[in-house]
Length: 330
Image (tube, rainbow, N blue to C red; front, side, top):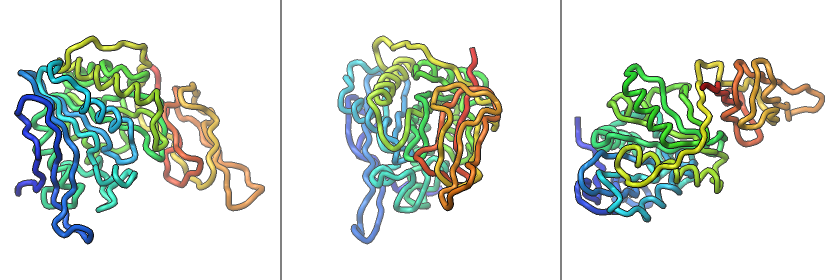
């Protein structure tokens, strides 16, 4: 397989804190010999594990970039034992455009792994993570939120894995992140995901969903900052005392957890995030806005649990995920 065209302007094995870019050549109308310049920071001191921390895998999700830009500018290298690779804005073209996907090639980075070194811009980014960055890592934290079309209770997530010892390690890291909710997240489709790529390499992988609506809140950023620090302490990379707050443990046993929209219109939620629902409860009503005098379509929960995610903003289309329900567990 050919080499990836991305080059790093920082050294991965040099002691200290080093800021630079992943330089991806990109020829376009505004710059014939241009490049996509993805910011990166490497923090290395002594011997120890390597953690990769990423934000803006989707470009309209902002808790990760805020927390990781803070970490990159404020971390004390003397508190580190090992190495931290920080990429605050993983899909940088999407982040610059405030879009979920790249404006260059419409690429959804979190559906294009393992990528291609001779593919589109987004496929090249995926390939660089797949073949260069992920093999360096022991721990991987990918910080997501709902973006412009979803909103979530603040949760950290792990997945059910065939290797139960690896799953246990991921769950321990998820709990160490210490979000208000800790979820065994059921993905609608895990093919091509960064999560799957890291897990298939045997890495300790944690993801998050920390709010949404295409904006941050003081609370969501605070949870993210604490969680990043806790994650690095758990990995044995960062010195210090981790925080420990109560968390609600959530399972997602099957696809009954998802409520899909089969109509078009104005959505009215009948349950707020974090509230309990029973099977058969109406979670949302969708009003037909093309005419008056029509009764709204009602959508019910298919399982007992808690509303952990919902569609955002106020209008919806056929095929949208209206609601995500998690099942509390001890």
